[in-house]
Length: 492
Image 1 (spheres, rainbow, N blue to C red):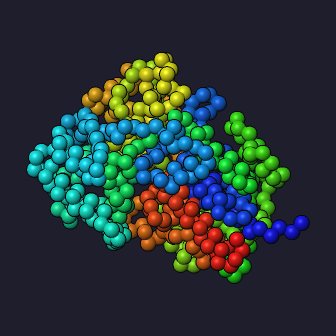
Image 2: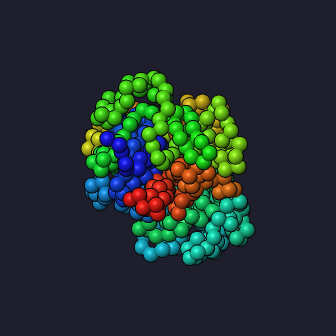
Image 3: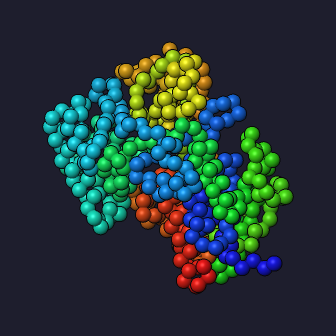
């Protein structure tokens, strides 16, 4: 029987790939296959409960209030955001370099109240407070002005932007300024002013900036149910596939070379998706049975395609993508018997390379009611500037500094019972740098190939922040590009 329905191949099962597949299947009479390489759905946002009962996190993730597209995807898949997401109650803390302790940050109510709260921040002398308030008012006004072209500020770092707007240089050293610069980037180096202004635009109210976490692993609670939803719509999920090359003729992708990783037989205690694993094991083959291709491959992996035939990369379009830089992400989980770090919500502004810490004891279900566990401290950051440091050096620096902060408590005195450190150097785990000038190298969903589209948090999209919401929106965007072609040609 000849198939007549359009066939779309989606590469990758992170937020972008799952969003693209769901949107395609919801909107049209199409065949969709999602081909993915990891052992768990979710890509860089995957986490799960391991065989030892501990939650495996390669980097802690938050869901923010403005993630409306992710919540829509959850609702469509039968996941109730109200019962699944757990609020951090609008509380955050910032390390105060002046006092050596923490200052609590609370923002609630109308837009700009988060900024107004800082008028009362005890770490600021009155003159600095007024100077900072004046600067932040200008920044918020620009970020919230309808139709403002914030991309004109992409070529300058946020510190330079702030200086030209009148912020005194020494005020930039306060933890509060670092909160705005690093809170949702966690970058120890320069960040594009455009990306910070985008953050202010999306997080100008408590509703939008409210922080949520899941009670368990993202793969178990979020991505697996979305995967089952895609299958219920008729989609196919094919795991443990690694794309190495693209074949093309003129301006059409005609084939994808696929290799099964050598460890494809090992499922980390999880069963593969039923009837979805091809017979080839450890072998390579060319996949040609598709009409359209949506690639959600992370940029560091994408630029490794066609390593033996770099003709494609000589074009200005693909050469531009290859110039994007990424960073190695870090995460450290420390579990103690005694209570350490008795605070609510995340702490920002800690010294690099692990600049954010959250005590997840009261959020993760498997630890919440365990009286044998006092604290579950999760640190995240990136390697930039610390490439030559050993794992043990980074761990010891983090523990030493944390333990020296007033009101935090000594980690070692808390009796460490479990410790896990991840240095995510694999290409698919790296994070794109939002450095000044980065926008000129980012691509949108369209490519020179009329049947190939791109999605992922590194692809430009209406959100344009490196986060799960940006990835989901880019997945929807790529899917809509395919649907527009099919609808304009009367195919669906």
